[in-house]
Image (cartoon, rainbow, N blue to C red):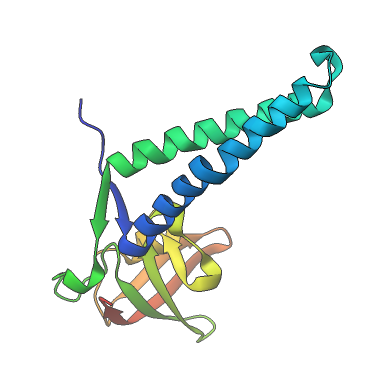
Length: 160
């Protein structure tokens, strides 16, 4: 069975590669050294530094495996090359107006690993993104938010 493609923007792919490189070249060697130093202290059964370092090593190795799997199944999407005929799709940047408050917001729809609400990047699996996908400028999207149904008018869809 083939693995499911993992959609990501060009920047998201770069961030994943940078994290993998840092884990392999900085974090892994550091934790190996920390484990060696903790072992040198003697009795491992009551050595908190050793236990902590082993837990950190397990986390690092797990994250490396996760990143390698994701990188092997990446589907890199360049929003500039999209021809979605004005529809909201993965990678698109969407200007919306909250019909309750009148606030305007701009979001880019990105992969889960690159989502950062402070930077205006929302996960494709978020309620807002799911409500916007497939819509075009002028459409009203109903989003099932934690506080109830919110309505957003799509002002513009950009592929930048």
